[in-house]
Length: 148
Image (cartoon, rainbow, N blue to C red; front, side):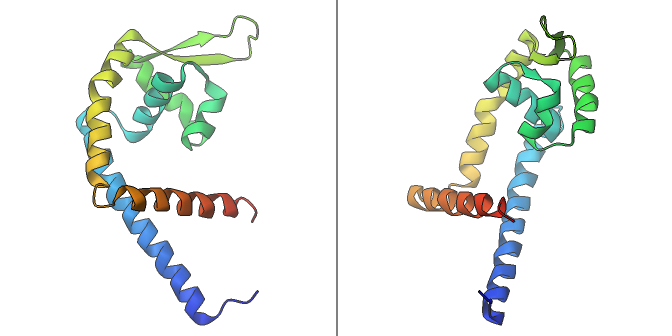
């Protein structure tokens, strides 16, 4: 199916609008994270461990969309801050888990409600129905791209 020039222009416009919206949201969210002494990647790792429990270091990158080489650096930084620890897998010496510490749990527990509230405020310009439509449309778009 050939796209006509108008379709191509609409696709480009959609890409630009999506990119700008994502950038605007991210800048606001990142500002809050930096204000609390972490960078966005550190926050993502900590939040993953808080909500999903211990994770093998080798799998964290895929879950938070980060190159695996950067994970060691991020885990080192979080370990120095005593927010997480490395734990050897008892039945497979090749596997090391990242585990959130009590201090890490307290930290994320203290800032996550404000983080959630801020995101809710940022997207409050959309009605519930518009949020649901956006979720469905963006999911459809994202899943379709896996086929390329």
